[in-house]
Image 1 (cartoon, one colour):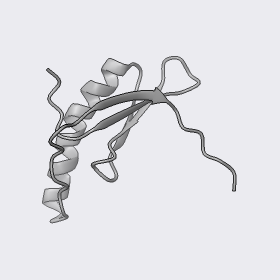
Image 2 (cartoon, rainbow, N blue to C red):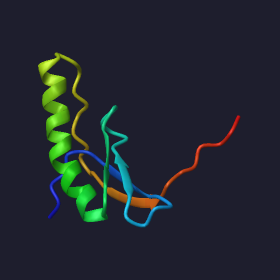
Image 3 (cartoon, helix red, strand yellow):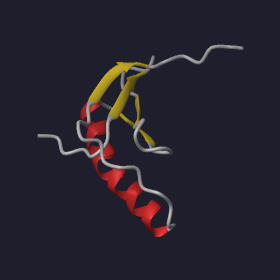
Image 4 (cartoon, rainbow, N blue to C red):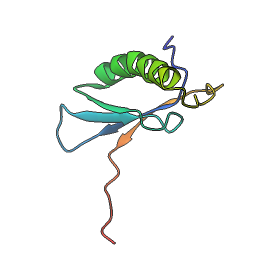
Length: 81
């Protein structure tokens, strides 16, 4: 079982060994990895560190997601306005 407290979005990029990740539940949290497994591993520990940093700075901590998901998708390209 993957023990995440927040939803994780992993995005594949044009580079075959480069993935980005973030959590829509945890504002400001993002990272990169070289595989899906690498992203999950980094996200698990990164989320803990991110929440601890919010606590240290007396900032609000988002509630844990009761049904967190891991979503793997292609990178969403930004559109030119």
